[in-house]
Image 1 (tube, rainbow, N blue to C red):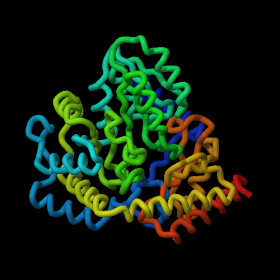
Image 2: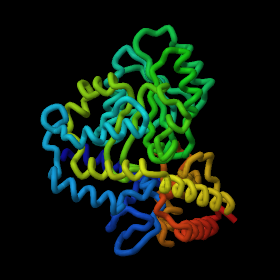
Image 3: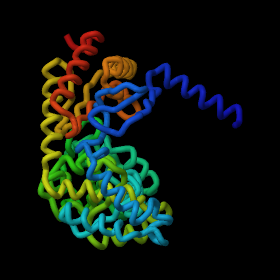
Amino acid sequence: MADSLTNFMSEELDRMKREGLYGNIRTLESPQGATVKINGKEYLNLCSNNYLGFANDGRLREKVKTMIDKYGVGPGAVRTIAGTMDIHLELERKLAAFKGIEAAIIFQSGFCANLAVIPTLTGEGDLIFSDALNHASIIDACRLSRAKVIRYEHSDMKDLRAKLAEYSGNDGKKLLITDGVFSMDGDIARLPEIVEIAKEFGVITAVDDAHGEGVLGKGGRGIVDHFHLHGKVDVEIGTMSKAFGVMGGMVAGSAVLVDFLRQKARTNLFSSALTVPDVAANLAALEIMEAGDEEVKKLWENGDYLKTALKAAGFYVGKSQTPITPVIVYEAQAAKAFSAALFENGVFATAIVFPTVPKGTARIRAMVSAAHTKTDLERGVAAFVKVGKEMGIVK
């Protein structure tokens, strides 16, 4: 490796360490769950996206074992050559039915789903209106599209309307995209207003519901169901790496949209299909969600308890409207120190710092799941309070 490149990378890593931006990546030695094992010791897990506790659910594991015996492990090709199996189509049909929409298509991840949609639907000469706090996968997909990106202030409908009016005379397609649930703050997009404004200006609407799938709506059917907006959002994008407890992305919409993406989306054309174990586990997760909403209710119960308890203890938990609980400590170094101290007290909760969140808003993002018991959460709150008092964050 050239010395200049090595020097550049070393200097950048040193800077990140000085500014508290260097991540200490811990290695799990156990399945995802309410607790995890790290370095041979058990820790309360408060930083996983395993919302419904499915990542190590026995029903998913059994389905995977059965389907591996029948189909093997890998698809062996991209979907358009020889990688489409009947189980891929089964999952797509069941996802569309679950979400109450015409059709769905699956991808390798939620990131890949955004890369499939945005550069495929828009290109040079088009316009994309994007919320200022949209996920990095949306930002990268917008860059790849070569369309002009107009950012509007986070969930600011006045600013969105002003931006749409400013560019209303421009030619080309216009796409408005927003996260459904904003993952760092836990707030929910103002989707009914967004849909109305987009309709007024004749703009295509897309929502990335990564943190809404399995969380919002009846039995976890997502933000469109939550707001009763069926048929009014053009593109629903989601992931199966969070509430589903597995891996994979999805796009749902009209049959024409799905057919178009199947033929033209580069992540469908040039990357191998979702693996058999992933498809099997996702089918099992979907079957559980279709059968009832027990896990979804437990998730919300746990989220409400944790948020209320931490707020009562004096922590600032932002304006979250979901089980996501951001504990704001502002400075990156403080967040890193807080996370390390929690770890010493048996709680695994990672610091979130720039560039994941804006500078000066560093936090511990506490994530509950349906797998946590009240005793687990009481233990977590006690650790937060102990560390918070030691660091002078709460009294």
